[in-house]
Image (cartoon, one colour):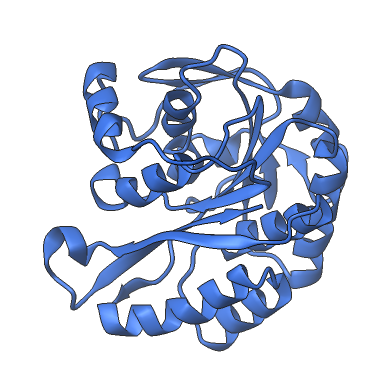
Length: 266
């Protein structure tokens, strides 16, 4: 199974030389930590690439990278695992870790499914960052998982299963989410602070409660909860906000923005 790019040339450059030049400016050398998980945005690189680049630059990129993202298209299963084959980017192919993906797919609520992944951008935009920040390592592999909205108890179950499956693996959980959508920058900062504080406290239940209570338009809240639960089971005790920006920082229009946060969990 080969998954070809759906948003190359739209969300990021389609030519490898142009993409590398962009990453050269976004991924600056930084002291690295061995993280359990990271939270990174998935908008067009011109808007969110600096946040993602700063975050990826802070962590060691291992052999196995489990990418958790929200389902924007409505296609496929509620929790869809792309379980075998390769993903293609302008930089070349990245293999699916079929052993981990198949094991994950054998437990509820995960199911093998490709339909949710065909047009979904939230995972695709992470893969070139992994290639670049790993030094284009041949051993790089991914496990792509797309989530629809779920009840909290199912999120918690999914997080525990993920932790059990990747326990002992040299792995990183990549949580793909943007934060507030299409509100003023001031309102977004207020709402996002509720979500970000819960994340920094590694409190997934509080994150879920705040997003629902305050109607925060954080598209990847479910992947975030699953990833935080798994990271805690794998021993994570700390979280650090690397960068927070808005689309207004690019457009100079702060009346209606989308917001992006980069967080390292270790």
